[in-house]
Length: 341
Image 1 (cartoon, rainbow, N blue to C red):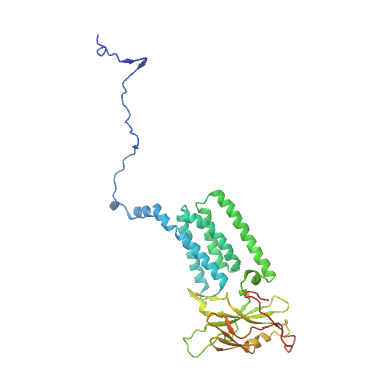
Image 2 (spheres, one colour):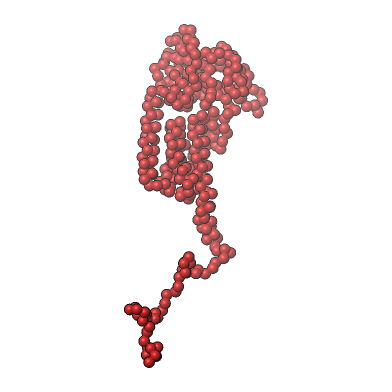
């Protein structure tokens, strides 16, 4: 009898083949079995969907990551200002809020691109810049705190390796503490000017009398300014006179940055506390700008070139006028800029 008619199945060796009721779909190599989503053309997407797709694009994030380089440049610029300029504010409160807002916007942009390589590298460099800003702008916390808070927040949220965050965070914290202690020590020893090469702006005195040449023309801008630095921290106070170049000033929003780095010291005097303190005002009263670049100081004429350098006249530094103001002064060579005795 025919085996197919009796319902017998074909045997192959000892394995018996049985028909499968519901065979699985055949999957071909290289083709993934994905569920087909209903098509949705870009014209049917809502505005928020398009906006989300735009900001979630990797090329958009890469483009925004260049903002981190702009923030580094901004921090370097602020650090340079704290080193070389004296700030005169028109509205300090408004300036502080705008400055804080700018730092906050930079922080938001860097958090958004925290996994991009440019942002990761920038995060590692920000705190060393802030340490330098802390040293040269010590005490100006309105300048230091906003970028410090922004940089620390970005550093903690960034895509940098967690172990590296712990190591660098510890190093940065130690460096900040050492910088603060070093500055306080130098300030107590009156050595900030000698070590940092910067004038101590806390000693800056602007006398009530005019320290610039003022001709009849109202639109004239005096290229030089005479300022005094009065140091009363020692037993015998000293007064140093400097000429600054006003053409290097920076007129910015709500404040003026007056250039002090590179100023020329033209004279100094010492006096004994409580005996002849009025002698400083006698000296200032005898100072007179004869022209835009000629200064009559201590009985001699000093002439400056367009870069603020002395081209005529000697720099005599008066050491001490004595107890009664009648002793002859002792003349000695000038010291480098930044050294205040």
